[in-house]
Image 1 (cartoon, rainbow, N blue to C red):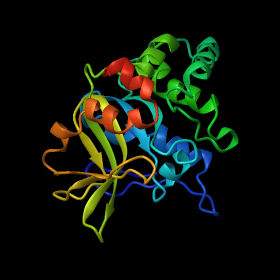
Image 2 (cartoon, one colour):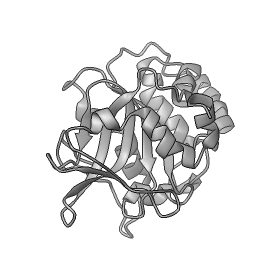
Image 3 (cartoon, rainbow, N blue to C red):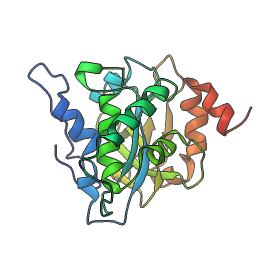
Image 4 (cartoon, rainbow, N blue to C red):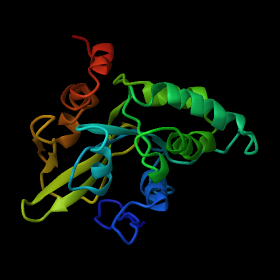
Length: 238
């Protein structure tokens, strides 16, 4: 995997039959922080993969949801670890926590041997972006399952540029703290948030206004609610 900020050089590792490998998934979903480390202040973000038949990860997500898949709370590794690296208790505890909630939040595994299930993938995300930052299983669980809009502004986009339509197609979106980062973007071109025929209308965003328009409340109402209505009842209201 390679990447650079505000660029298009981001790729996944594929097997010879064009399928995602475990290593490619880990690089794509767990290794993003290397793109940001030592460049910008600490970045924390709740990430969502959009279901999209034309995107590698989106195609996997589409197997389990026609709308979105939660991928975790991603944290730039900038804190000194204060949890014992030899303690397996955190892994076991988070396994139990993830098992209790992954379906309700669309947090499905992308690992080939447990696609759409739980919990090796979810534990790996926690170990890389929670435990390594000194965060306990309970703390990380609270962050992943907290869909309130407090301290969550648009701060991450993964895109693929469509030269035929001259638009940046959003494939992954994140809300949290830290500066806004957009990967794979063509500067000045509008953004498109694609929704399949089953889950709604495609939305267009002005390049300069997307941070003001694509809020977490907007995302919950137009995306999350289409698949997990209870989350909107809980955090937005009737």
